[in-house]
Image (cartoon, rainbow, N blue to C red; front, side, top):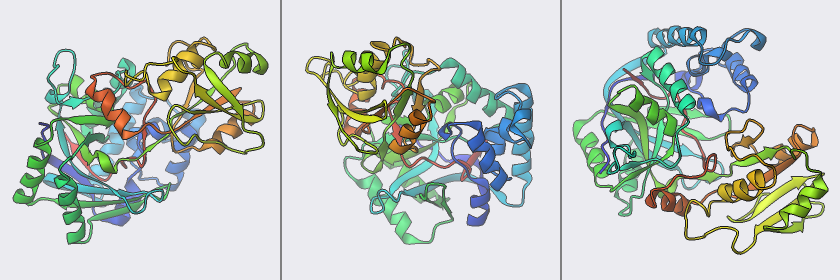
Length: 412
């Protein structure tokens, strides 16, 4: 029975124009610092001045180290400027309804209720009865980076996406009722043409209705933001900024890979990969994205191929082992290319905001030797891994569209 509670002191943009100026993608949605820097040139008041403060420089060659003392001091100063800015205001005791409409799914907007989740309810080895279930392991250095920032700015800016099954449909009904009842308080169109709308909830009775609906759920699954929730817990904070979404409205996109051949020739690789996969050349197709799980696209030597795992190459009854990212890690990235550590810096994990054409372009440019294109994980797979109390393979779920930072900030 997860606990939803209001944000005691919420910093929000004063209107939609302010939200356009301040809000930003989350820190982990970028392939390079250059992408962040370019947004900052267009949006000098963007929350990225805080969350990616090392990029808030006139020239990237002068950038301080990410997460270093200079960057953290700058983040704290920028956070204070944002608090003092006439484009923000503070609301005490806030919940909100959050809607994201993707152009990919225009008739099925992602709807959730935002507030605080409870760190005491996160399931860990020390707290096996916790009802907020993580789906991936925690990298200590990444968690520490988020904790250092949170501590430096005395604010929680990064949302945790919590999925609940909402089998009764009552949560989605209540969310739709709010969205249909009045105009939203904030509206933003992001860089990928997703529409974000927020309705502030300050009425006690209306808030209690959503608190009760979330408490009626047996569990919540961390769909995005494992390290952000862990950072709050590590600092001893009782809560973390979150949005609870019904699973039926969450969208997933692929998490692809760009890789070196690590000493193999393309011919050797293609020969060896057929030990565990059926290989089919796709001829003259320009891009390829698999249309179902347990099927992969391989781009190498200027051509696309389809890979299908052979029988016995994975255990379909083990929900985590049957995830595509686990199959390619075991049989290709580790088994053929010798990169057993998923954190190996030679592996480039490419999120769902980049398409197969991007993968092809990086290989054609000589940046990498091959690309692996995956189908999105399904919500049934995601929930099954959580219910088996296992972790998703690293970099296997890219929830899309992403929650946008800066629409609500929790001041600590």
